[in-house]
Image (cartoon, rainbow, N blue to C red; front, top):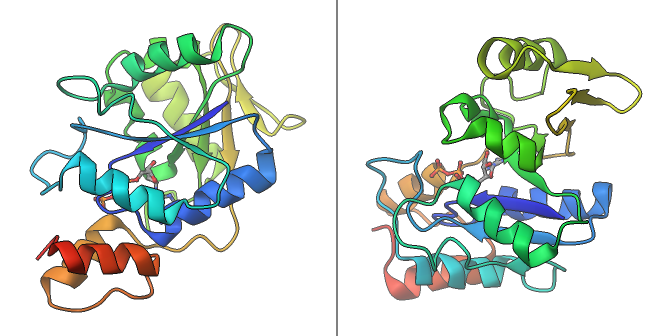
Length: 217
Ligand code: ATP
């Protein structure tokens, strides 16, 4: 089972593209999209309500075989991934393999996450390329240095499996998805703040929703 978490403030076309590519390339037995209630890594950003972000996710992911999970929205306080994985593990049972997906920008911040080693004992990580960010094209050598220096020296690249393996922790899988665009939610918000219409960045229904509700002005 694959988990794709984020703030989705708002969900944009690159998020949807990443989800479609995971479904196509990995054919997971389930894909949970998990919006954060209070993300630990986005201090100071203006975040619209969970209800708005969930409504937009429903529009952007309509027709895709994914579960939009409110596991973090139901919890009080900061949304720590370690807590989310504990809950999802109970939901999916002990047999299913768990994978957490994140863009490579988020991955290079992973050593600052709460209980990062515990997370790695509970779930593998799928690291997706993200053009326009440092290390955006997933260079194996830089990922290896990051893992060794910041996480644990036990990781080694396995060329046959195309992943980093570890004697006791779960694997780290770099996944290059095709034609992913450099856009971000920040770009969307900036565009709207400036009075423009980000038609190329958003699902049309999401754009209509933002305009109807007057979000991000
Ligand atoms: P913001 O600009 O507000 O920081 P964001 O665009 O990075 O937001 P998030 O909701 O934080 O969006 O992203 C959720 C996940 O999606 C993260 O793991 C992030 O790395 C990944 N992601 C977001 N945009 C892209 C993109 N263009 N390509 C690949 N991954 C992306």
